[in-house]
Amino acid sequence: MNYYLAVLKKYATFSGRARRKEYWMFTLFHIIILIIAAILDNMLGLTFGIIKYGYIYVFYTLAVLLPALAVTVRRLHDVGKSGWFLFIGLIPIIGSIWLLVLACKAGEAGENAYGEDPKGQLSVNDDALDSHLTT
Image (cartoon, rainbow, N blue to C red; front, side, top):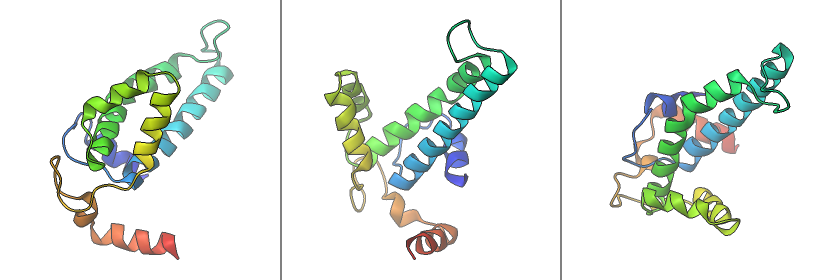
């Protein structure tokens, strides 16, 4: 949850780099919240007619659109690609697969054109969490 909140704190920060863990933890919590919002919309009768999504889902999606784009751009920066690579996702099927590959790829070690290596800036808590998760 800390990674999700960290992304929200960097609401519209498109510069810098984002680790794989930051990106995927944000994505995980984002999907969970979307599912909960859709369920709440259906339970409370807030859906738009035959569409199974409603006001809560739309409000949340719009509120988190900018941070989601920003963390994706920072993730692309971590693998050495420009944020403009996000538009490759507009190519049907292949573009989405390529973005998925880039999101899963390990970041460049050391400093690159987009900033310091985020793994080099780990705090003590991140080190302890990483070691705990790998054991």
